Image 1 (cartoon, rainbow, N blue to C red):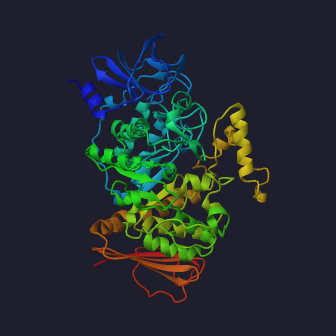
Image 2: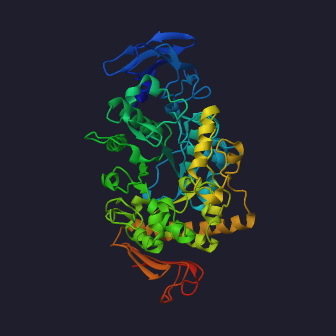
Image 3: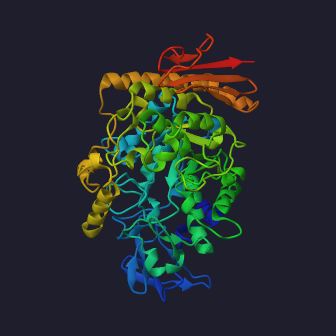
Length: 582
C-alpha cells in the first residue's frame, strides 16, 4: 500500500477529493436531492454514482493542481470540501493534498496549562496580511512569552477582506492569505518557536455568498429552525455530521494544528442521542495524535457539559471579560447590564469559580443563565480582557485602553496574565494598542448595501455614534483595523510589562499549576473596588492584591512581592502578586 493510499484510508473522508494512490483520486459529494451529478475536470464531465445514503462518488485518474468541480443537475459548482480554489468561491476547485507535506521540524506539542493564547487576524496582523508575513513575527511573540496563537477563521469566503466567520468553503485557506503550503509554513514556524497553533472554526452556519449546499442539498439544513445567520444546520444527518467532523480532523491532521476553537457552539443544536460535538471530540481523541490536542468552545450558555466529558479543554469565559469591562468603563447597556450592577463582586466570583452566572437570579436579567461550573479546573476557562468580538462588535471598534483609565487597564492586564486560568490576548493588546478593530467585510451590490444598513440599524440607539458607524465594506475600515502603528514609547512600556508578567508566569505560576490544585480559591472583597485572591496548589500559593478604583479598607500586611504595579495599600489602581512555596 502506498503512502497516499494509507493516508486516504486513515482519513476515512467521504466529502471532497482524496488521493487514493497510483495517480487516482476519490471524489465524494452528498447531494440527496440531485437527479444527476458529474465530475467536471479538464473540460470533460464524468458521471458519478449515487449511493443509497445520497452520497455521489467516483474514483478517477487525476493529479494535484488540476481544476475540478461538480455538475449538479446541469449546474457546475465548486466542491464544498475543496482544499483549494483557483479563484473566488464561485469558481473551480483545485486538487490539493495538504496531507502530503513532509514536516521539516519535529513537534511534540505543549500541555494546556502552559497556554498563553494570542488571538490574531491574519489579514490585519501584518501590512501584507498573509501567512508568510505572519510567520516572520512568530519568534518575536514567542520571545515575549506567548505559547499559543489562535488564528481567526481562514475558511474561504467571497471577497478579499473579512473576519472569517462568513466562510462558505471551510476546508480551503483563504487565498488572500496565501496557499495551503503557506499556512502550513506558518504553523511550522510557530511551532519551531515553541508555540502551539489553534484555529478558530465555524460549524454553526455558512456565509451569505457562495454557500451552494442550500440549493443542491437542502436536507443539510433544518428550515424549521433559524439562527442569527439563517437556516440552522441539521446535525441529525450522518452526512452533515461527517462534513464537520472530517473538517476538524483534516485541520488537526494535515496542518498539524494543536487545537481548534469552535465558534458559537450554543447554535449547534443537535437533538440526537449522541451530540455531534461529543462525537467530534471522541473522533479527535481516537486519532491517537502523538501530541496534546486541545479543543475550546465558545458557549454563551455557560454550560460545563462539554468540559465535563474530558474531551474539551476549556471554554471562552465572557463573564470574566464583562466584569472587567464594566468595572473599568462603567458601561451598562445590553449584555453588560447584569455585570454593571456589581462588577467587583462579579470579579470575585469569576476569580473563585470561573463563571459568574451559574443559574442564579441576576440583576437586570429576566432569565437565568448557566449551571454550576466551580468544580471545573481553573484551566477550563479562557479569560480575556479583549477579543475580536468584544472590540470589533462595538460601533467604532474601541479598544479597552481608549475607554478606561490606562492605569486600570494595566492592572487588569497583570491580573489576566498571572491568574491560574488560561489567559488570552487580542493582537496588539500586548503593546497597549489604541487603534480600533472594526467590523469589516467585502461584499458587492445588494449584499453590501444590506450589510451597511444593518450595521447602521444595529447602533441607531447609540446617539453618540450618530452617522459615524464606519462602512464595513470600505477598504479604509479594514486598513484602520491594523495594529502596531501606535506611539513607540507607549508600545515599548507595554511590551516590557507583558514580557515581565509572562516571564513570571512561566517561571513561577505554571510550575504551581502543574503541581495540582490543593483546595478552593479564596477570593475576598477588601474594599468597594478592591479584592484579594489566593489560589492554593501543592507546590505553593498564588496570592494577588487588586485595586480597581480605590485601595482596600484595611491595607494588606507588607510581604515580599514577585511583581507590583503601584502600591496596593494606598493607590486607587494597583496590583501585586506573590508566589509562595510550601
